[in-house]
Each structure stands twice: as C-alpha cells, then as structure tokens.
Length: 119
Image (cartoon, rainbow, N blue to C red; front, side):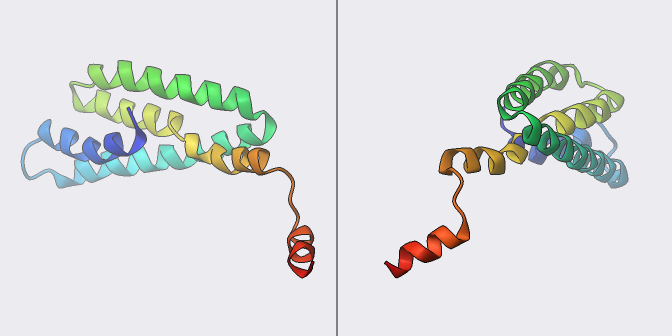
C-alpha cells in the first residue's frame, strides 16, 4: 500500500464508523495522522543521515507490516486512531529521498557546475 491512498481514505473510513454529524472526530483522526507523519518524517530523516540502507529497509518493512496488519484490524474508532499514529509514523520513506539522491548524483559542488559552463 502506498502512502497517499491511505492518507486520503483514512478520513472516509473514520467517517463510516461515526454518526453522520461528527466531523470533528474525523478531522482529529487526520490531524493525528499528520502529526505522527511529521514526527516520523523527522526521525526517518535523522536515521537516513546516519545509515541510509538500514533506515530504508526498516521503514519499508515497518510501513508494510503496519499497513497489512493494523489497517485490517481497525474496526473501531480507537483502533483507527492507533493505526493513524502507527502508519503516519512508519511510512515516511520520502524523508530518505534527499540523501539517496545525493548518493546517486555524487558529490557535486556549485563551483564545479559554474566552472564547467565557462569551458
């Protein structure tokens, strides 16, 4: 499961568990998901700065396990809140992209790019 379909469907799924007029709780689920995603993004970025391969492997496995296990078990609102925290925090693989791109591109400095244009 990818990050965006889960983040978009989470509000609809939470609304299906509630009475029709309870939009505050649905917004709260999305807010908690986003807060957990922010914290997970910071921790993933910190881990990627230390060891990119192990961080990518850990986040990939953790996000997959949470998506496959916790989403299927989230049949009450409390479990949906738990899923929002777990998946929001463990699915932030995009925080590794900057470090991965610098490894692929190599160490290029701005002065190297300027000098190559003059030649």
